[in-house]
Image (cartoon, rainbow, N blue to C red; front, side):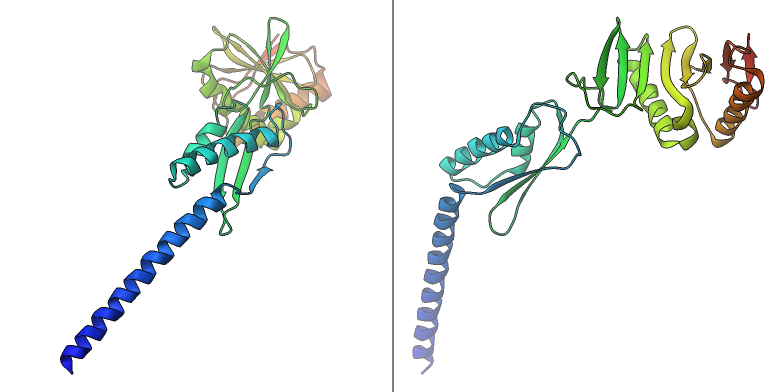
Length: 244
């Protein structure tokens, strides 16, 4: 009896592994065939597409990539597809996911205008990572205007300063521009009154300094008039200096 049990056990194991091999082969074959007709869905995750790239362009890139993968009969590398899509400089981020049905879902994040940069009497729009954007017409009118002797080394400080102004309700309400001078540093321009606000080469804003600036600026605006000060020096702690 033990001998028959062993034979039956061996037969069962043989049938089990044979079926397992068959289904694995079937799965690979059907998966490969399905890849040739895989659905591709592109979704924009930012409000506006400021570039000329279209969903059809992205689908074409993905289709060519998938066809090459299918011809080589290898697994899809979503990171490689994301890198191919990011060759377009107007796309900031691309995320590729495969759902359980095999659909390729591509989520696109476009670079968006961060500041207006004035140079040689021309206006350029830059993203937050300082990539120049195409000529734009429908942009936020409250974008800060940036000018001066700027280079890539200054972009770190400038990015911090711009983000600080955008995020702070007080600063965002009355600051309209930033100028950089190699000798003086950063100079802020209010939206009302032609007064330069000198904050130095390495500006550091805290809540106290912002409130102090607001009180002083409102006092000039309401009591003394815009012509009372030519500039305001805010480089030093606990004081605001009016330069006539």
